[in-house]
Amino acid sequence: RIEYYYAASKIWERRIKNGISPTDTYALSCINYYENNFLVNFPIIINKNEILLSKLYIDNNTIDFYIDCLINQNVSWMQLQPSFAYKIGRRLVHTKKNLKNLKFLEVTGELLTQEMKTTLCGLFNVPVFNLYGIEEVGAIAYDDGLGNLEILEGNCILEILNDENMRCESEIEGNIIVTGLVNHVMPFVRYKTGDRGKFFIQNDKKYLIVLQ
Image (tube, rainbow, N blue to C red; front, top):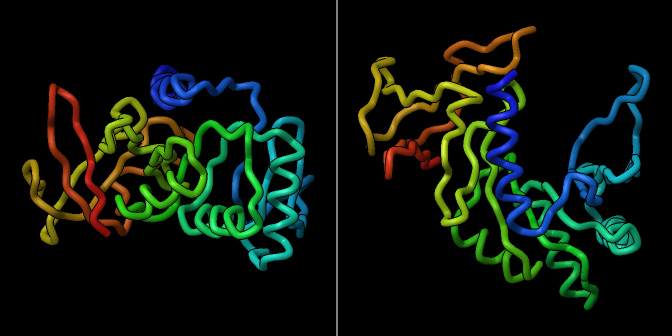
């Protein structure tokens, strides 16, 4: 659908600006992986240009194994939770290893503070972009390159509601509520994410600030 391609194009626009191609090797973090409807317990899975890193294995020996694999596979970009990326980054510094082909780090799944973003930039020496989304809806907002989360209005309808379920005006904190526009098999309408935030409008674009 056009909404899906709009959201995907906005995200890929940022990636391509940082030298990333859809055919580049990339790494994702995950918890569970299913193959033929069976749960596969694994620390790492390599599938063509995709590398899956399990968050269940985070001891130093396994992280060293992850790092060696990322180096050997010439990974160009990664999408990780901030805390997971931090552990890998700290281990890189400790072992004096370098992901020389890494161009871009995308973080998602956890609140990203400016302090953590600056720390990750320093650990990996690459641009760090924030992707805010939830599994039920997908991508909701994406880093505009200036540190702001631009709401992907083609992918979802985002509302900020107070505790009485009334809409909040710009810059007023409330509950983040989203309606997905892509998943037509199991659509989520006015879904309460459990997060709180506020929005603001600048140059006719709508931005999200996630507070907790």
